[in-house]
Length: 114
Image 1 (cartoon, rainbow, N blue to C red):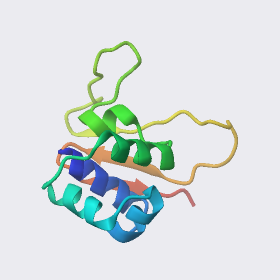
Image 2 (image 1 turned 45 degrees about the vertical axis):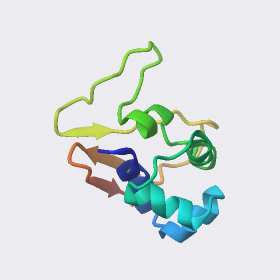
Image 3 (image 1 turned 60 degrees about the horizontal axis):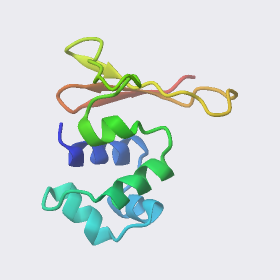
Image 4 (image 1 turned 90 degrees about the horizontal axis):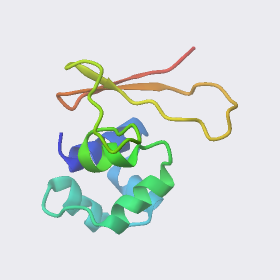
């Protein structure tokens, strides 16, 4: 999965249009369009805005497609078929809003508790 695919996945998982996402991360819609089309690679500032706006997005995953365990070694997904994104809670309180499972083919499933 390429970086623009991961950005598109963030947009879809947050149920936003590309325009809404551009406004939310404070970038020009044309800049986002060029990144999503693969014409341009996202700048560090562009990626920073995504990570700042969506603190639950793993920066390593966004940039490389792999998560890191903090030991400077890429971690492998638990199986060849899926990678489950898990993020540490900042406040330690609240209920689960949804669970996202990302597959190697670029697809994902979203589960919402009842």
